[in-house]
Amino acid sequence: MKHVSTVFFFLSTLLLTVSVNSLPPPLFPDEALPTKSGYLPVKPAPGSSMFYTYYEAQNPITPLPNTPLLVWLQGGPGCSSMIGNFHELGPWRVLSNATKLEPNPGAWNRLFGLLFLDNPIGVGFSIAASKQDIPKNQRQVAEQLYAALAEFMDQNPGFQNRPVYITGESYAGKYVPAIGYYILKEKNNGKVNLMGLAIGNGLTDPVNQIRTHAVNAYYSGLVNAKQREELERGQEVAIALVKAQRWREATEARTKLLTLLRNMTGLATLYNQARMIPYRTDLVVDLMNLREAKKVLGVSETVRFEECSDDVDEALREDVMKSVKFMVEYALERTNVLLYYGMLDLRDGVVSAEEWMETMEWSGLGAFLNAERKVWKDGDGDLAGYVQRWGNLTHVAVSGAGHLVPTDKAVNSRDMIEGWVLGKGLFGGGGDVVKQKLRSSFLASS
Ligand SMILES: *[C@@H]1O[C@H](CO)[C@@H](O)[C@H](O)[C@H]1NC(C)=O
Ligand SMILES: *[C@@H]1O[C@H](CO)[C@@H](O)[C@H](O)[C@H]1NC(C)=O
Ligand SMILES: *[C@@H]1O[C@H](CO)[C@@H](O)[C@H](O)[C@H]1NC(C)=O
Image (cartoon, rainbow, N blue to C red; front, side, top):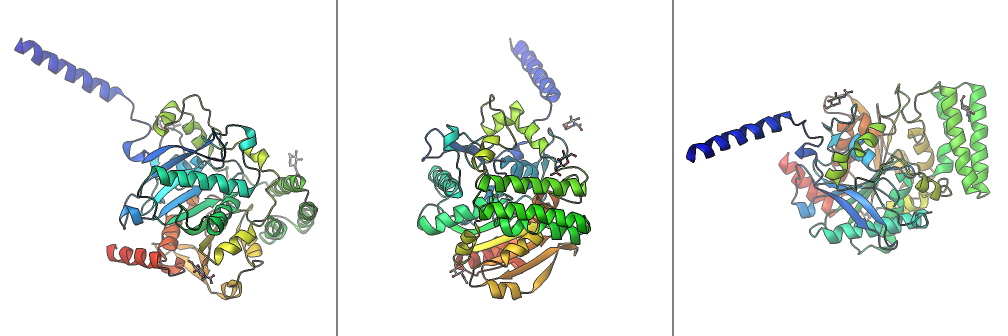
């Protein structure tokens, strides 16, 4: 009897070992799993919910209930924040192979919690109960985002006092000011302890921004004088349509202008003039559609993941050319704002930022425009970009990066966001109490 069970034990151990060794390595190593992920019901729209992934801070320098929380919103309109998660700033990314996740040396969740939201409903894994529930303007976007964030705070006691920084890219140049404005104006004592807004290569003030395509391309040597005039005519058409409040046609005129610019320059992508091929966001689509990825993220196997939603793009078609500059102006009097731009972007680049920023009606504008533009060097002493800052406004031009700054300059982008949140070095700002506390504990720990 004894012998039999020993033999049996030996055999089963052997079998187990053999079968473990022959299994392929898991797609998601344990360290790559989100701390949590799932759905946040969006109350004003019954049956609709926003999908999220959350990554807790890897090496927080403060107790978790005080540790800053970054919220990331993708652009589009209609594109999934899983692009940001798995191709830009998340802790593990796919960069060249959809079945090979690699650790990100510049993950934004080193010191802070990081929440990716598929916003608005209808985007990525988020669920829109009906097409009518998809937002058509920034007010509706803000209401849904707030509902989702409030739900997240309710589900996670201990998060209520964490300083919240809303961040995002591209079309989130609309969403970030919209949710910031909504909270600062109407939910000041609500569930979100808002401490700052950060926008990367944002579309925020479209008319002033699209005015710069022709001159930018011309003085970069990408087009000649005749082509510059043609681009200027395209810009004027779009601007005239905005003035006439023919919003849908204005959006289409902008799309045509950008197609013209791409045709003239022959660039692989306007998102980064140095790239020989477009950004590989297709890898994220492949990854998200793998059964194992859906299982790990808690998503139904039957859902097909799309990078960008046509329904959401369509719902916001009349919103694209509307400015949210007044929301940024409002926010600047009340909180910290970071506007960063990868310098190789020809869609929403640095020149377009200079143009709209100088038209802001903000009490600090004069002082900001006069502030020194400082050279930013990375840890090796190499040029990382330029930083201009006064009061609550920090503006960063990121060298060597296009539209997807964290993809192109992972570590520099992390240094920037950490410096800005902690009010440290070139990026430091305001000097409010939370920031002072964070800064002193950071200095004490480093
Ligand atoms: C992608 O990565 C997987 C897992 O490491 C590997 O088996 C596969 O050969 C890779 N594919 C390519 C095209 O390199
Ligand atoms: C851009 O080029 C494509 C292919 O040559 C052409 O079909 C299209 O009309 C062009 N668009 C613009 C706006 O120039
Ligand atoms: C900057 O934001 C703070 C809140 O962080 C606010 O108290 C202050 O008035 C703002 N400063 C300016 C010049 O608007």
